[in-house]
Length: 291
Length: 341
Image 1 (cartoon, rainbow over the protein chains, first blue to last red):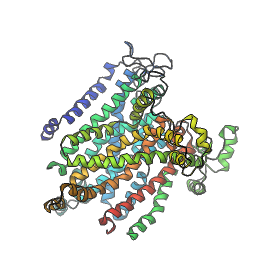
Image 2 (cartoon, one colour):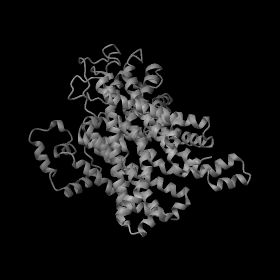
Image 3 (cartoon, chains in turn green, blue):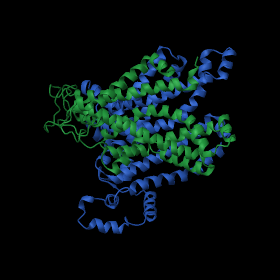
Image 4 (tube, rainbow over the protein chains, first blue to last red):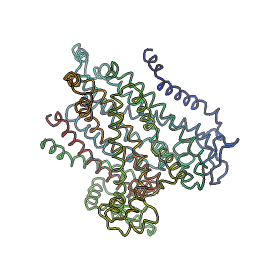
């Protein structure tokens, strides 16, 4: 309750929460806001014709169409669900993998710890988007493939963080006390160390959800993410590039192909970042009693 | 100090081995047919039945350890296969496209490092005042803005509307001049200056502005955030109070006592930042059609040009390992606590 009260005091975090709420509502009401013409595959964007040139907003297409006549409004509504699924699933999986590996490293002997952490270093030697792009290309097209690729190269920072936290907390008195009353090592880890070490990881994870959505849409933009016609913001944005470069005398002629999907993406990421930032400022004990 | 560096260097082969293993595992996810392209200089000339014979000949169905040994030998000989996307051997393609990327990263690093550190520390010394809030808003927007969206917006405004900064690496009129120039570094700007081609220099610079601005705007946010929080923490240390109570001027306290110490975490994360920039470069080069190594990788990924992708990954990983090594050594240089451990 105290946390909630603090959150509401800061207008930036309020903005973040309101935005996030908006996206949740859109995702939940997607079938009402944009009824899918093919109910069994709602993520396929309906297209009206195959003409190449994008068409501006009209009554039939409130946000216009992309090249190849995909409806932008539909793609944005269902893309919200894609974004939530991507962000939450990739972040959730990377957090779980990171916690397991970090906890194993911290609670085993020096040799295993060293091997695991050097393995982490090797994974970290690849720039994230490059590694994800390469693995996604090798695995083949599809949203699930790019999610696997992102998880494969996204868990390392959590492993490092949780390992450091566990090592620090293990020195605390309450852990010694738990050992003294006869709790075994697994019990101490699961009931005493881990619950106390997990908090910073969760804060960092909340800030990573937005980044994951950015990376997923980047993969789509580079052409190795979702298959063509899938309701995904990054892909709709990638359709707009050619029309921005070759729009002739009026550079903003095809503005709707960029502004709507990019706006949705930026606001979505911004909402998570604002919420994450607020959480960190409130929960970080070092900043709590600042000057 | 020497001891510390030696220990890091000794560890280098182990990291390299691990890296090669990881890349090799990724390669093994491909079918023998897909891996075959690394050995064929022109796959379009293959006839039916040839592929099976070649898989047999190059042992692509062999046990994994034999394949790894063969592959790593090839890598050491600089033989990385043939990139169909650009019709060049992979090693030649890396040599051709890397200087362009290097140029981009070097130009982008200047505003990111200096501007980021300045804004971050100003933001901390003006904690919770207007400057701090506005810096944070700009940084969080930069953090939330995907690189490709920022790039497309820049393209729309600065190319479409104003026609100041066109896409590509060099104007069409300058290509014959660039091809005839004597190459010293491979960087268009520097080579043009050394050849006293000032119009080419200006043109190369003009093509750099938009991609450099895009990369720096996005990476800048990270440095600002780290500098700010590190500075806030340092300003609360006892030795800062000591410095102030000695009667030192606030400017001296902040510059000499606080900022130097606050920069330590900034240096350690600069490896992370370079990694982020390399990722950003892939996107930015694609958006602006700037023909560097990232552009090549994206084209290769779209056309399933596997030798190119694997070669690009390997090259990237090696570069990152060396950057991390330099960062670790730098870290020891500025923080005596590390090298005394």
